[in-house]
Length: 87
Image (cartoon, rainbow, N blue to C red; front, side):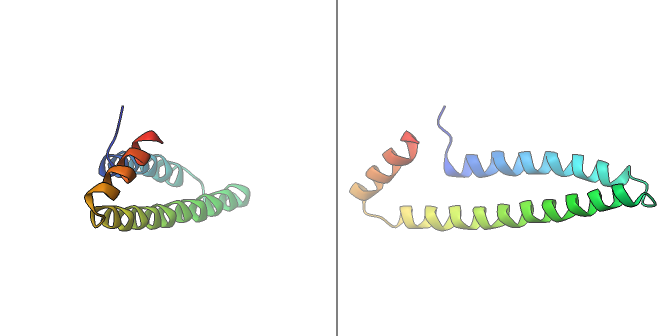
């Protein structure tokens, strides 16, 4: 199965959204008075913020790469597309 660059981004965003629901459920089910659990939730929040930040960076870089590919000449474009499909 070959998925276009936009398709990969969409699939990744869908996966991220589905995991956001899980993270929100975990956050909502925790008793804030338990310090051990509170520390774990803080770590979860920081990790989740990092995931979202890296996701946005990845999306930006993929978009920039797509723009560069679109600006290549036709023969160069064939080489890049073939290379991308091979991976």
